[in-house]
Image (cartoon, rainbow, N blue to C red):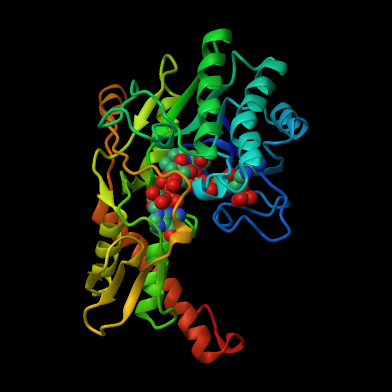
Amino acid sequence: MTKRALITGITGQDGAYLAEFLLEKGYEVHGLRRRSSLFNTNRIDHLYHDPHESGRPFFLHYGDLTDSTSLIRVMQEVQPDEIYNLAAMSHVAVSFEQPEYTANADGIGTLRLLEAIRILNLIDKTRFYQASTSELYGLVQEVPQRETTPFYPRSPYAVAKLYGYWITVNYREAYNMYACNGILFNHESPIRGETFVTRKITRALARIKLDLQERLYLGNLDSLRDWGHARDYVEMQWLMLQQSSPEDFVIATGEQHSVREFVEVAAKELDIAIDWRGTGVDEKGYDVRSGKCIVEVDKRYFRAAEVDTLLGDPTKAKQKLGWTPRTSFNELVQEMIRADLQDAERDQIIKTSGHKHYNYHE
Ligand code: NDP
Ligand code: GDR
């Protein structure tokens, strides 16, 4: 029998990779999308088909994590075997600007989905995956971080996700639901949102290389992260729902790099060497060849409370799920740079030839 999955956050980075992965596995895939005044489906347009034609078993439904009625309606219609709750206001810095909305969508939104499962009597049918995060560890209490490491969230985003984490555990224990948390460390890709640091770096450096931009402004260069590839991580999300009993898992590479190092590796891919001068908010990075300043620290990108260092221990996932990340740090940076360089080249042609004359198929 064909399995049916409902993905919230299908228009985001992970949603797009997971939808593709599940379709390849033969699933019927349903996604929750928000209404927007602009098109917001560009990451999944290649999967979509005109509903008037037969094609992939791929369907989109309007809904929002802050609106219970839409969640109940969509779940009643879809009757999913698996729910992947990937939707969230996912930007840590923005959560300081929109703390209440973040709590509503990321925290209470998780509760709304779990309650919908209960209200619709789907407890015995529907398995639930919650997109938990390494941000829960915040001010880290143990290195590396594993499933048993105590949490210490450091942002409204992380506090909201803490609620999502515990309410998922609570519904598992209280109602015997198949519900689990994937505690995922940072994962990136060429379709990563442009305001997260990795994509901001690869996009800006590619544009600087082609003289489309002069400088890249960043915040804390000393921040340390455990960066993996989103494509590898969505496989884990699925694997967690295929076990005989639900458990929570840390998903990470077990390797750590600084933001500064990310800049250097990305620049090297573009044949740019960086000479760093100054310290703290006065630090600048110069292109060794041209002598131009191409990276500058701007304190507006510093956070009210920072998570300085994150390093995951994926041993449990390796042992119980047989999972290891496939993409190395250098391969990840290479793939992102290559894609952003292609975009920049297209923008350069548009700039020099004028949009009207540009033929995308040339
Ligand atoms: P993105 O920001 O790329 O995608 C977030 C998705 O959530 C988008 O589809 C967005 O819709 C949707 N969304 C936001 N608010 C709502 C709402 N109120 N109702 C319905 N949908 C909403 O995130 P990622 O794909 O990177 O991450 C997926 C999940 O995993 C998130 O929950 C994130 O917090 C979590 N996570 C991510 C990690 C990472 O490194 N990427 C690491 C650990 C956890 P729209 O397109 O309309 O904005
Ligand atoms: P993060 O990712 O906060 O870890 O959350 P982000 O890429 O935004 O920041 C990583 C680190 O880089 C520092 N930094 C900057 N960050 C941004 N965005 N912009 C800058 O200019 C900049 N300069 C330095 C940050 O201070 C931070 O230390 C991501 C999200 O996907 C969450 O949803 C997810 O839960 C976690 O990863 C795991």
